[in-house]
Length: 126
Image (cartoon, rainbow, N blue to C red; front, side):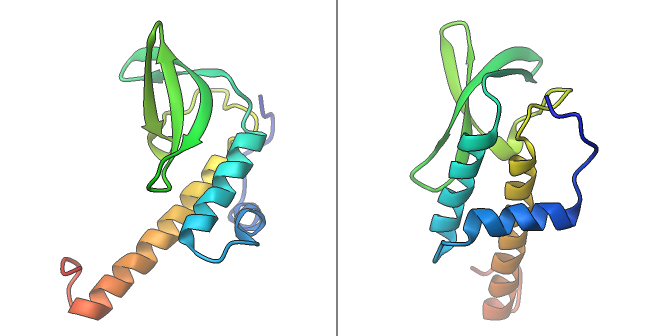
């Protein structure tokens, strides 16, 4: 488990640059984050989902470039978007890569929203 204090925005930006440095588009950037999370996140770990204890055994990436945590409880398994996954305390080692992915994702979402506004004049006209 990580023993350091909360990571800084500057550190997250450094991780973002490391994850996307060789990527040409958003899909390749998501794949870069997947590789870094898969490589650095200490697995397995236990967390709570909807009040139930689950084990996160691995991470995966969907055909729509969404990084998901593969959670299990007994014989049941469920893919949960990693940005929606409640993190346990203490947080697992390597979780700063999830924080960097979240920061990148939110920046990407803001760019998309700005593009939508510029294209249609409103936030709703895609």
